[in-house]
Length: 50
Image 1 (tube, rainbow, N blue to C red):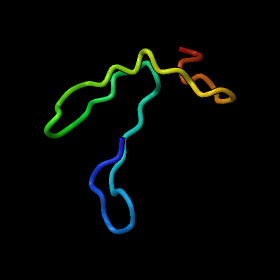
Image 2 (image 1 turned 30 degrees about the vertical axis):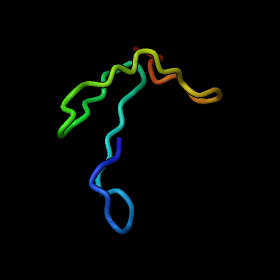
Image 3 (image 1 turned 30 degrees about the horizontal axis):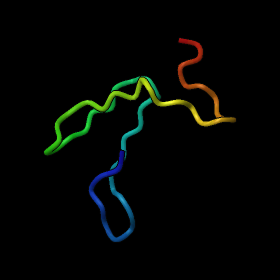
């Protein structure tokens, strides 16, 4: 998630592994459920080794 845009791009970002909830701050104030998101082909699964 990116927020606080500036002339150089976004000043703030937050990442979370697929399957973990992502907190959407500000006016939305909700958690985004990422449990249904799939790791792109050819990328390591971020849940391996848990």
